[in-house]
Length: 368
Image 1 (cartoon, rainbow, N blue to C red):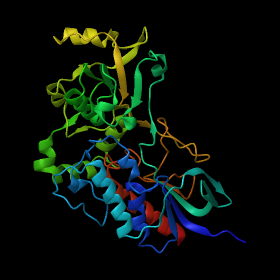
Image 2 (image 1 turned 30 degrees about the vertical axis):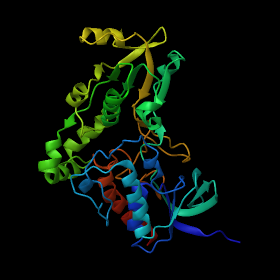
Image 3 (image 1 turned 90 degrees about the vertical axis):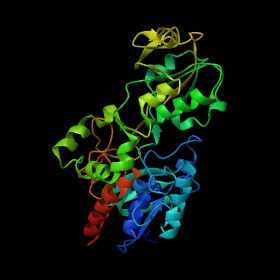
Image 4 (image 1 turned 90 degrees about the horizontal axis):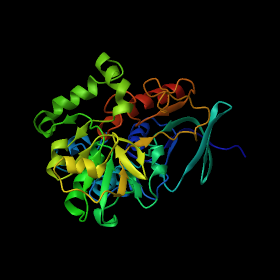
């Protein structure tokens, strides 16, 4: 019996995959969305307890459905997860949960998608696994004293789950800053440090008073079609996204000791520009720490893990080589939701809809 061939298989049922499904629903194309979690939104539910979105509600909605909340409000992770689940239900998107994709390969003009629930065939594939799938942890982590508790920010849940003692959060992006501030206010028995060079900070007033203008600026100007956008994109994967809703001033006011970049390990302890954390604290007129770090939280982001797509061309940082979302070397394979895929907002919730619409237009043309 000949196996049914779908027009499109979308891999990933997060915001990028659901936005793609919204636009596909209007085309008449036969498609499925594959999600590895048990419920839509679980990738958000499983983050740390106090996590809120980094962008306000008015810029965190998917196409066709606003978040029912004041525009300047920052939804928490569970509220946004429930929004995603409601979104899939509202538009009757064909999401198949509990389905892990094992491999994708091009075969005789179609794609063979092997999953934990069997094999699908599709004329086109949209990969929307999201940019937060595989934690990035520096190799020097293996040199640290085995008595140091280590976890990635994706594994962090709450302050009371950590042992008493000094804590270093490595990575001065928004996630690292917020975790460090929470720990400083709720974790007794040690000093909390934040290590790394922070990215530029977007003041709260920008979103509060000039939000629409600012969003329009970054959404339209900072793209791969403009000279300023290409300049930002060139260093984006080295520096990361800007700080939103939290600044280094906030971090210091919370009692967090800032450290330079982590540069190595000496006697099993981390050093920062050649200096141990306790010595830096003493130089900053803080009470000297015992001298030993007890916990390290790696808020060092994520790395692309796309080797499940056979023969995929990738760029210098391991992300797929694309032309505005389409992988030219593998006709029929597309991406949505990758960091700075087309614009600074491509990896943000409010920016995936535009990229999804662009990809679906290509899929419609490919079908016809």
